[in-house]
Length: 84
Image (cartoon, rainbow, N blue to C red; front, side, top):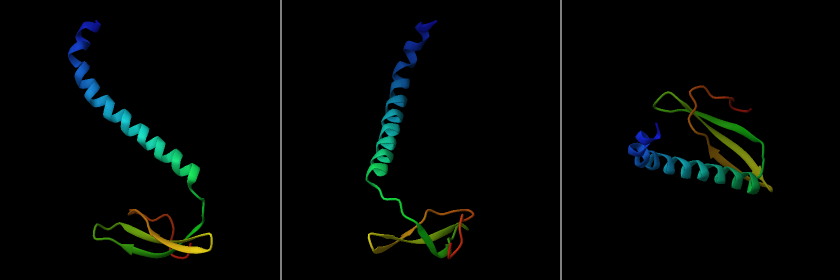
């Protein structure tokens, strides 16, 4: 029964190794961000519709007294409105 698997071994390795490496990098990045990151509250200050019909939000947040802005990924339906 396992004799037929030898012909697929290279294909499985070629597929499995990059997937495993990608998953480990994703987990490492998440753990690193949680260890070093700071949890803050943000306020939506602007909402723009893109060419594709999605919405990008501009968020305002503050860390140690300094204000920063960031733009969100596009949303088909934004989770918040301006001022929230």
